[in-house]
Picture 1 (tube, protein in one colour):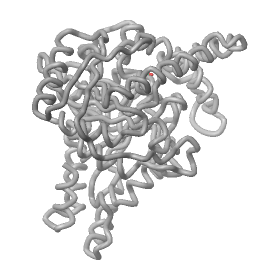
Picture 2 (picture 1 turned 30 degrees about the vertical axis):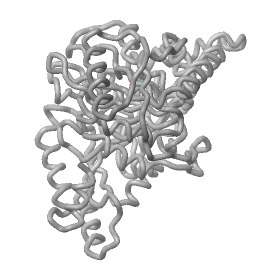
Picture 3 (picture 1 turned 180 degrees about the vertical axis):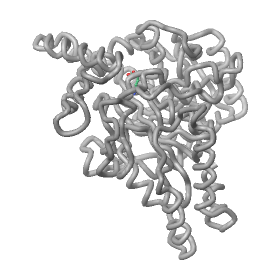
Picture 4 (picture 1 turned 90 degrees about the vertical axis):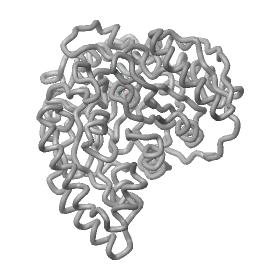
Length: 441
Ligand code: GLN
């Protein structure tokens, strides 16, 4: 719990140095079994000592001495940012992403860079060029992805919190499978400057933590308008939540998972005297068909800079199968695009989904559904590309609708964590967090 930890550190009962040393030694001891971390920040302990000095002089920030793990597609000056790809192997960031600047200003300390699906393309963690990381909550299962190392690091106790990126579910999906909280903010609420993009109309950076309150604290630090990201903005947020009406859509997911989610909704509604009703959402079955053409085209376009001339290697020469599939697919779709057949059509469908949700939020405060429609598969089990893409059928909706969404642990099935997903109207991130806190176990 970040709030308590900061109090402890500021009171001198635990030094920042000690907190960071504890994490680094745990990572050094256990990471070879888990493979959550790709690179450790060797300067973390000396940076913690500087924070201790600031605490003594009474000028330390809100996150003094708190340790974080960063997904390997977010630039942290001086650390390797390789997107878990051979393309950017040993690429050292020359600047800090805006989110990192903001966290460092509050005296948080970067512990290291997390494993992930290559260039954030994946839902299982299996596409990393440097080996999959383990799911510490269910060792025989995939951790989910693409922010696999970020979620796994929180459960493994390698950090106080982690940062991930979410284009179609990559924060919420591994949060669900690993049993932690993961938040995707509203599109534009958090600056994407310094994030190596997967799909720029959908990407958002967000926190993963062990409770909703931790995500709330981190979100309050990283959010806001940034001159370096033209779509970033300040939303006029209302923190107060009154009587909440929850919408529950009819959407296909594993029966046992739905059972768990429904029970949780009932339990929380009874406790808080809230109500829940069915919400009808048309077109939400089109999520995957709408999401992938957009991602393929934007990813293809974004990867043209990885041609091996300025830095790294030519992406097509060294990347894995999933990344190559998207580059080739994106190139084909772009060629056919003169007729506006795919990408432009997908953007139109995106608008329709966005409107559908905006209308629903006129009647409902939040919408709740499972984060992922099925349990994570076993390590080594081969699944089809379609099955892999379907992991995201419920999480892509928030990205397409540009709304905030959070995954919170709802319980376990066969010992495997299952996440509950809360969605809210665009810009109502704080309200969503407020509701989320009542669902925290
Ligand atoms: N799994 C989805 C994909 O492969 C989402 C990825 C993400 O959110 N970064 O595109």
